Length: 194
Length: 264
Image 1: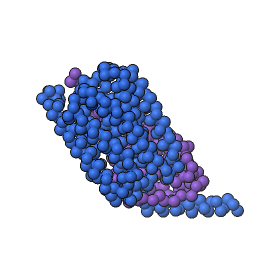
Image 2 (image 1 turned 135 degrees about the horizontal axis):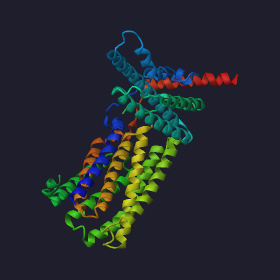
Image 3 (image 1 turned 30 degrees about the horizontal axis):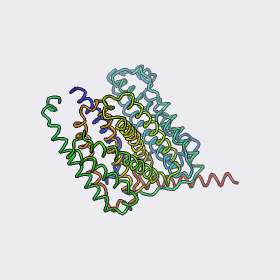
Image 4 (image 1 turned 60 degrees about the vertical axis):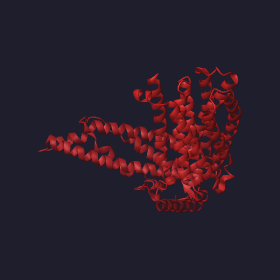
């Protein structure tokens, strides 16, 4: 009987606290706190509207942790295993830097797409579906990469770290934004201050 | 935890939590009466009065008495009407100026309808000890539980949309949506939890949900303010406003150039 009771309490409290925690982070302006703002990074209007993909600057990521890179380095004279470990750690750090920047750009494009939806005078379920689809695709790819990076740090360097899904998600979302922005003029929304 | 609970005087805790809840409802009602938008959100006052009465009565009458039974049967349908009015007006207030995201609102309504049907069916299928006071009680309790689950889900989705999309709404309206959805969620969880345990721990679940609700009511009282009716907030500001303004301006300029080039 006590076990059921404890289980019930735990489930209730966990569900309630999770919902409150998830939402409270997003509802900071209501409590007079400033939310953490994104920096647009490489997302500029020119980059968004140009024919060159938004993700061009992230192409080096694909090479950073490639197995063939280590093979090349190992064959260089005077290259020790300790030096290789240091290079790998540096490359992972660099990779994480790129990943953070990519995620930031993705969040900015998502936000701009949301602004397009909010300012549209007609219902845009197509954009809502595209946004949901690419966000899910991006999140899944990001989780996979995080696990692979952990494995890589543990010494399993043969593991492939594929960033093509992340880059594709950002590219396709950028295309959606480009198309949506071309169809309807945008104005900054009201209500900036809390 | 089990040994701690055995020392815990449930009836005293229930009286304490219920009294705290009634006081917090009175506080939020008082705060609400000071707002200029109190007429717009009239349904909240009705809900507060009925909630306070429903919590006050068990302190003087046994929850198994006839008068409590008829009070429950009489006021619960009125509460449903007020809940639906609240959900409808909050939905309309949030989405009225944003047709572009109206489809998300419709999906939320659909999800709530499915949740109401699913919760009602599950309540009937898995009911244990629910039928003892009669069919009328069963009917009212089943509808109440289903409606609570569906409406709380709907309001949580509404708050999620508000927190995801850069929409500008009245500050107090956002506060009403967040706190009302949280309180309904607590009630829905209490109702479902009470059924899972075959109503054996009703006093304990009531005490816990009263405590959570009281905290939420006090938070509601704290955050509401008369200026909030006039202040417009953008619930989620993800990009620096200056940067966003510049970015959108640049996009528009490039669009304009492209359009003019296209015409030539």
